[in-house]
Length: 235
Image (cartoon, rainbow, N blue to C red; front, side):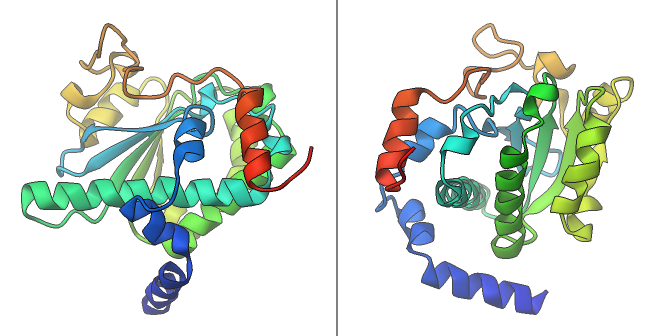
C-alpha cells in the first residue's frame, strides 16, 4: 500500500492535468459537457457516516459514439472526474472540520441492455477503472449496485476482472427485493431518490435529474468534432 501511495504521489507531480483541473488552470469545458453522456455521475447527499455519495446511471448511457473518440480523451476525462471527487471530499473536510477521505458510490443499472455490449466501450472503461485504482487508491468506501437487469451477470463476468480484489470486496449487489432496505442501511432515506425507494424528489423528478445527469442520448456530433479537433484525431 505504501508503494502504491508513493507511486500515486509521483504521478500527481508528473501529470499537469491533476493540478490543472484542481486549480482551474486547465480548460475543462469539454469534460464538463461530456459528463452528460459518459458514466452519468453526480454528487448528491451524504451517507450515514457523513461522507459524500456519488450516484452513477450507467444504464442511461449511450455508447454509440465511443469508438470515435480517442482513449487519451477518456483517460483525461477520468482524471477530471476523480479530481472533482477529491475536491468534494476536501470541501466537505473544510465544512465539517474533520477528515473525509472516502465516499460511497451507488451504481444504478436500470436501462442496461444489449445496446451496451460494445467491446470498445468495455476496453475504454477498463482503462479508466485501472487509472482510478492505481492513482486514486482507497478513496472508494463502498459500491452499491442496484436495479441490475437480466444481462448484468453476463456483463459482470467481464467487468469483475477490471477491478482489484480489494475493490471487488467493496461491491454490494442488491436485488430488487432488497434494494430499499439495503440502501437505507448505508444512506438515510432523505438522500435516496424516490425512484430508488427513498424520499428525495428534486424539482418534481423522482430520479433527481436536476442534479443527476438523465442521459439516454448519444454524444452530439458537435461535441465529438470538438474533442477530435482538440486531440488532433481524424475520423
